[in-house]
Amino acid sequence: MRLAILSALLLSAAAPRSGCGDEPAAAPSDADCARKRCGDSCNPCGPDRVCPTFAATACDAAGHCVTALPWLCYQPCAGKACGAPCQLCPPGKPDCHETMVVKACDAAGACVPQTPGLACPAP
Image (cartoon, rainbow, N blue to C red):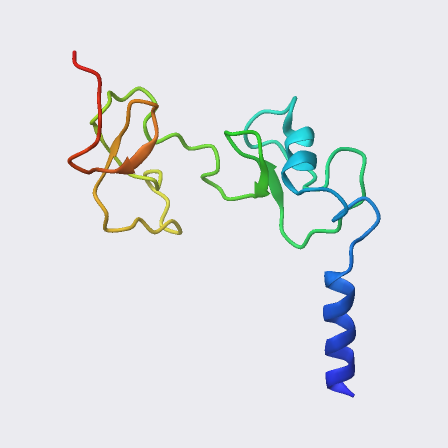
């Protein structure tokens, strides 16, 4: 009996829902974040659609609807020069765990692993 219930739940979770699952995930979530700021709540299935979610979702800095984290909109390289050290976790967030990889800001302003090949424009 438990196996039958578990199977039914898995099948219902995997089945496409009307308005959710019948389109690529990136297109609807991008559409819902198109006119929203980073951190605004969003619907991963797109605007005006019904999409049951179990976790809170919000627009990230790239305009994607993702599972919301308190540091979702943190930009570790904001105001830093290319080659400057950075951390992906914002200061004062004990629930964020930084990797041991040493990171630096790249020319595009992303916090990436610091490697000998990290290219920064000459000053």
